[in-house]
Length: 381
Ligand SMILES: Cc1cc2nc3c(=O)[nH]c(=O)nc-3n(C[C@H](O)[C@H](O)[C@H](O)COP(=O)(O)OP(=O)(O)OC[C@H]3O[C@@H](n4cnc5c(N)ncnc54)[C@H](O)[C@@H]3O)c2cc1C
Picture 1 (cartoon, rainbow, N blue to C red):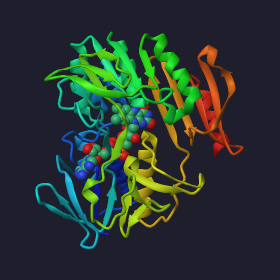
Picture 2 (cartoon, helix red, strand yellow):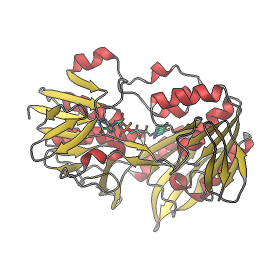
Picture 3 (tube, rainbow, N blue to C red):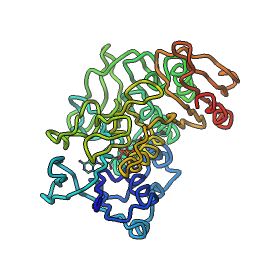
Picture 4 (tube, rainbow, N blue to C red):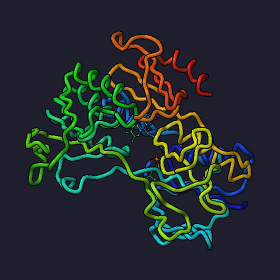
């Protein structure tokens, strides 16, 4: 291979580029990204950057000079609009065509939008650094925030906004916050945490429409309730950024469909939030939107592109920080799992929970017990 192109200049793409170098690949690497910032870390965007404890610049993953030192060619502000796997060419929005011998797709996900309301001033989504700083600027001048969607992003943003002193309401049609990530039982603890901190958590109810003409003034719920708002965050999940792969020869179905080695087509691999692959140990096809997976899969895709031919079988890891509470989990936490408290006590705000499915341990979760949780990872390995 003389030339590797990586599309998506973020956690997975950067890791893939650095792994290629570490594994001894000395030829050309081009990292293409549609944002204008150097690759940066997203988890602080809903936590430290939003609450103001970090300057935005701190999220940068590497310094400018590091890319030159590693011989990684950066093409920022460049959107890939088409892939031709026969000709092995990626076409950019400005018409430029980048040829490759090996390609890694790491384009992540984009926020899912509501059918209407995003045109109003004061309505935000949160995925990028620019979105985080714009959202924070409006929060600083606002009194009331409504968060639509009680997944990890909505919950973290609600916590940060409470820390800034706003009145916060979180709305979700499901029975508990973060139910998709942690199931109903732990979701119940998340709801209690937010209620203790003064957040109005409204579950089991959806949003009918957003109110306002130019500026958002509120949110009307399915049950007719009107919630006044100066700022609204729409945090209803994300969709894989695969629109540029239409008719490319790469199969897209809830992400880039890969084999167990993260290969999507001859010479084409995928990694991070965008990649779906069959996890041979869990016996299921997975697509994981977690930071650690972006790193691990970036490494795996790069090594497999170089010929390692190793199935990708990680133990998924996820964490979320809300207020002073740190929740983290290893494994595959499905909402249908049976959850038992294995150590500590939820009443003390410190515990370890085990997730079982069909009698097998599939996940361990630590609530304010990071050290003990790390020891428990072994149970899954
Ligand atoms: C606010 C926030 C908080 C988070 N907090 C946590 C957390 O606490 N714990 C945790 O485990 N995970 C967290 N995550 C998830 C974690 O950040 C992601 O899993 C990780 O960023 C995925 O990395 P990635 O490189 O696969 O994709 P991304 O980081 O999404 O990067 C993909 C890049 O590709 C670019 N791109 C897309 N399409 C194109 C195109 N056609 N051409 C060129 N470039 C393109 C995108 O603009 C983006 O820059 C959080 C995410 C967000 C947004």
